[in-house]
Length: 379
Image (cartoon, rainbow, N blue to C red; front, side, top):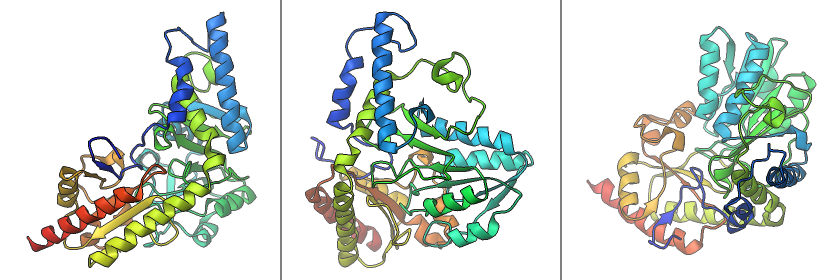
């Protein structure tokens, strides 16, 4: 809980910096000019730290260090993978859903507008595509599959491991957005996954740093060109400070998970069950197979925007959905695509906890939410 007594329940937008990540960043916070691309002693020191960080990440993800590329964040990583693969397969059909993050969805829309073929897999109120539907849809015309592992708005989980097996059997590249998965529960980058993306600030690491996993059998055109950094696959001076913080945030995960996964899920379930006990017409969006930290709730009879602003004024910080859509008053594309009626979509708010969230914070938030919803419903 912050010193000003506000209750932060928007961890799918961004997270606090883990003290261990901050400590790891001290190497690059001192007043010494270190650039890993330079051959002098300062540069060599930096490069050694960069190599160690990359190996630590690769060890946890169980991949080859040469398959890891650093970026400015998941949006850049998604652009690099999607545009790279789409350039290779154009105009073949892409299998995806309308539930993808905007950094994927807008690229797919652009691909379609340029004459590429796109098939949006059906989804229902669980908020994830079914493996059976993908099996039926995949064909010789399929050039790429791209799906989000965990939906950032609802927390709904995709069975990406089964889909990866199908992709592998059909020799179709499969790109996975792993942003909302990393740090929440243990997972593996299984055979059949061609590329996967992650973002530091969703994981108690700093902002401005992302990771692209690209299986070594694939060659893509770089998105950003210039110098020869990262084997000329991503030009630009390394964000060493961000890399060190992100590396530490990933390196400590095996010691934290799945214990923290269980703790977060218990808190999330307590939060949802208590609200439903104390309020009528509170609906959980996204089905039962959801990531441990995310609650997308519709408070029927309330305008979501009004409720969100009222809660914020009382110190409960939540969101309407993706931070990349902030400021938009349009109904959630994700919830609408799941077939929910307008009232349910427009009364929805996303609450997302972290491993630092405490039960007493949730109790205070529940009290404020219950009072606020009851008040709004009487207006």
